[in-house]
Length: 91
Image 1 (cartoon, rainbow, N blue to C red):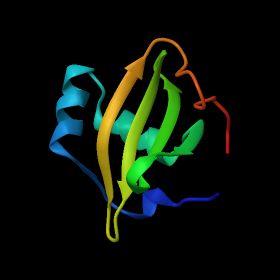
Image 2: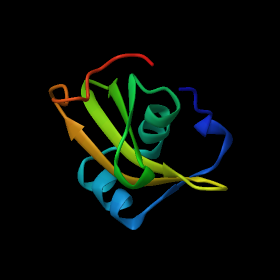
Image 3: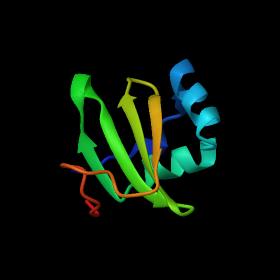
């Protein structure tokens, strides 16, 4: 599966902006995670989860590709790898 998300502008849902502020994640880290994920996993409602180990922590960016932009829905931070089917692998 090959995506070229960087070709579309990235926009942020109000919820995502709040989570990013609460978790001290900036737009640069979020966009880098989408554009260069360690792993990319399909989610519900046509969403995708991009995972990245960056700046000493694991990020999960949940987003949806719209016709003319990428919409970031939420950002989650962990100090340990996300479990379950979210293994870290390059795809």
